[in-house]
Length: 157
Image (cartoon, rainbow, N blue to C red; front, side, top):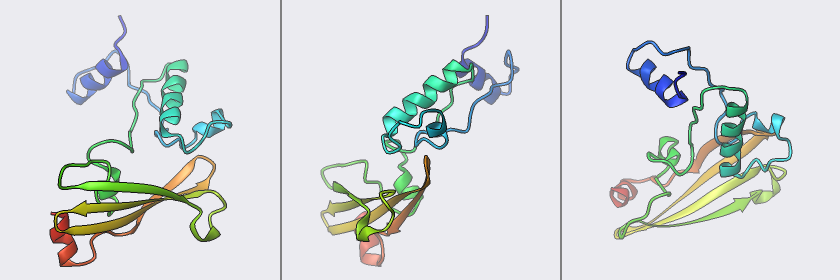
């Protein structure tokens, strides 16, 4: 009986021999390349893109392996120079707005996630920019760093 994708990957990670070599595609949840198969899909709808990636890999018999960039822990934001604005606590209140095409540049292909983080020590702000460089291919960057001084670092801690 063939292994499931999960069983196959776990065997490989344990340095055991699986029933066959695991095969997966380099298509991430933000939709890199999936728009070539589904040109009408909204490239900004992360959940719909992820489901299409899974659906397509099932259709061709590939092993399902996905890399979640959003809503995961640890957050992509702090790995790219920002703070984790996906989590809130009683001492870490986050408000995020999405700004499209700020200053008129980007031709509808740039979104800025502008976050305000309120802590007991004060307020921090950060901008996290997502730019579509070509259909379905995105660049991610923290373009306004939240920590610029030692006082900001103390607030974040």
